[in-house]
Image (cartoon, rainbow, N blue to C red; front, side, top):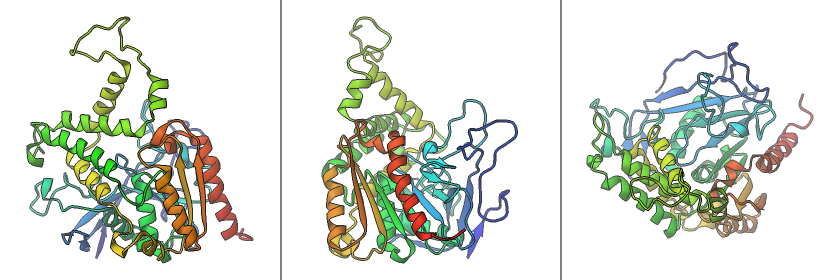
Length: 404
């Protein structure tokens, strides 16, 4: 049985409203609201554990067409959430969604054409059921929350897509961990995915990628406020989570981008002060700021669970090989890698592309010369709009040729 928490909506699944009190650019989706879908079904997890009930927080943009065939699911990365575009209040100084430049009328994900969905992953901390959610005993789960995988995230999203009445997604898109979810969709539910947009991602976490995630987790474990995950209602392990974010953020950038942005510039000093009491270099201050900002919006236990899900990720493991897993797919594929991305490398993307080509799948591959490291898929907006937006427009024109 499905139960949905009611919120003020328009008729049909469409969420894009702009208040009269603030003028937005014509390509903004304006004011949007977070929705919550509550499910009484049992979510069977790969670990063998179960979760019931569970909730997914989500947002939608644009309008679903009559035959419900124009829906695109955007899957977020580790630190993301359902708020991909627009504003929740429109108050001065409010930051828009995490990929606002990509979602809206005429943008990469063109809401004049597509109904765009983004949900917070299961295990998250922005409205979906996760470690900080209340368990059936009305206490936060903490480390009692079951271990999750990327496949579990996709399984939970499937409930949401069913609720929205969508039989087949026009496309599933994502960068980094979002790309893992996107291609997992095509393997687990091949008949329900028209296209996969696989951006700066991998089909299998490497030892190096696992090592960086474990370093971040150890920083959280070492924080005296972590208390084995039972810190709700008391001081949070903010210092440990901030360090974890700092380590991760380094992997999202390239040496070139760090050098270009900071070099050896000092922070608020003309000469080296030779001290531990404050950041001496600008890059130290930048990383500290990233950590401070992150702890204001993210739960440390969610960070542990989601990074573990990334570490567990091996698309071919359940099917004997990557080729066997991809042999299940029926989708078209757009794959993008970036020259300066040393976290998810071009070699990993090319292994996917080669396997898809051997299987006779329709695949378009772009290796992009970009200096911003792993974050290039978020930063290179104009280039991404040209490649990704152009690809979606071609698929749209082909699917809806002659349709008015």
